[in-house]
Image 1 (cartoon, chains in turn red, cyan):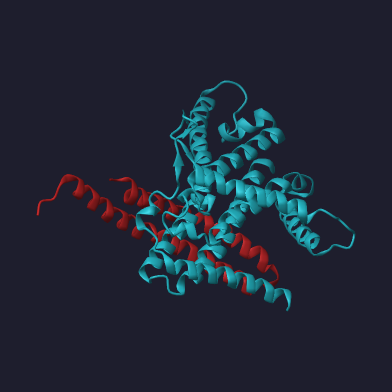
Image 2: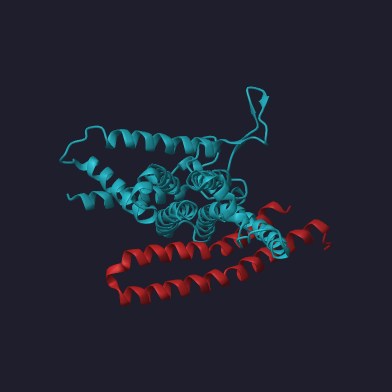
Amino acid sequence: MELTGAEIIKAAAMIGAGICMGFGAIGPGIGEGFAAGKACEGVAREPENANLITRTMLIGQAVSESTGIYSLVIALLMLFVIK
Amino acid sequence: MSNKKKVFLVIGIIFTVEFIISLFGEYDMSQIAAPFAKIHTVFGVKIPFNGINISTVLNTWLIMAVVIAGSYFFTRRLTPIPGRLQAIAETYVSAFDTLCTEVLGKKRGRKFLPFVATLFIFVLLSNWVGVIPSFWHVVDGVFPHWLAIEEPTRDLNTTLGFGIMCFFVAHISGIYVRGFKGYVAEYFVTMPYDKGFNGGNIGKFIFNMFMGLLNIVGEIGKTISHSFRLFGNILGGAIIMVVICNLIRFIVLPVFLNGFFGLFVGAVQAFVFTMLALVYVSVMVNE
């Protein structure tokens, strides 16, 4: 079986998408877990501020999530755009 | 039957219909790559910029119609003692009023309340509309594919439009509050200058210009990450749903997947999008 150039490019794009998503998910996972843990501590210390803390936590998590979203977009580009 | 039970009944019926419909067909995996039907010509006239995503436009109009009709019917007969619809509308508005006045202060918060509240309801409905089952989505050849109900926020054009809108709202209100000079100084005067012309000022000028470039790139990056976040979350959820649905042959799990990725993630992302828009405005406006 002979491999053509296009097939090799497609395979490389698939592998690249997997690696991209795998490494890209590490940072946001750690960051969001850290934020959630700190928010838990905050709620345990001051239960009356639970609403404000939850809201702030969600915003912070959304911001730290953006690197993961970038890697998702890159992975999608590699999967679907590279022919 | 209590109201709570009715709500659960409606959600249950939607999920059941979705489950039954999903039994008949099978998502085409290759459809993920090109989910948005495009039209390139209208009455023989070619559309510039590579055509229109007709399905996104139609779904956006659907949600606009729902929002406009809702705001008409919810505030039709306003009374001092609110009825059910009026109570819903009042709860919604007062919740966002509290939010805006907390972030922006009493006077300015009221000015940005319509913008923020409208943005939230629109993005929320856009994210939730994907839960509605549309059988022409699955059964091929019955209806044209562009009639399918799918989230407009799954298209980058919609979210990028929202992001650019938030950018302009924030920056124009920044210019309005600080004046043009103060607005430019915000970016290009990181280190304040001394009086008179000397060597230190030249060094500061070079440093300030460099920092100004970084600030501009940061502003552009803010807008891009703002819009890509919503897009990536919704599209990623949709792709995960399709992949898992194909793996398990549509048995029971799609209901919960729709509940999580459609309703929960949609609500959280709509809230985050709105809060970030509010925060960007408050960064520009508050001293």
